[in-house]
Length: 185
Image 1 (cartoon, rainbow, N blue to C red):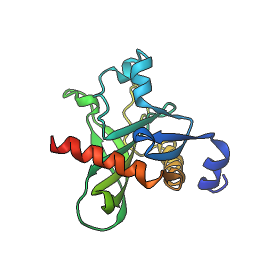
Image 2: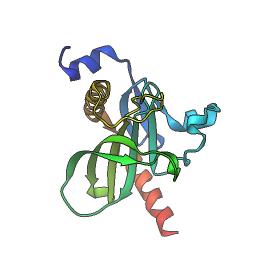
Image 3: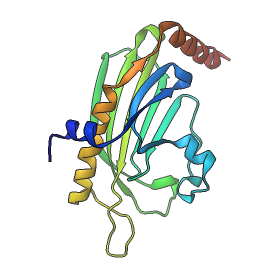
């Protein structure tokens, strides 16, 4: 296979999406659907138990493999200007106490927007939906299919991070001033 960044650029269709009312824009593969649209327009039971998306978040779900891209505006904290983390965890999906744990690969990028006293946190969650002998999605992160899925989603993430656009400063200032006013009330 050709190198992954080139592969995702040439083999997936990308579209420009607006974030937070047009204050930011990002190019994403068409496979990443806005979760608000999915929740509003479908009766898909997969999404029926999800918590609604907060005003400080934009959430996109890969319709082919349930990977989720979450973009959040958070309170600013002093520190390094930006950093990226990569790891794995086992979680209980949808807060179902008696459910088995899902293996999830996670990539997080934190961008500090000091001038707006805001942090921009971008997280990609890639669950392992590999089926066990009973046909239940219960991967442990070791399958070749999951490893390839993670590699492709990571390449998509990297390409998308190179495709974040900030609109004019006035639009951004209005967004962040509105956010700060809401926090004060």
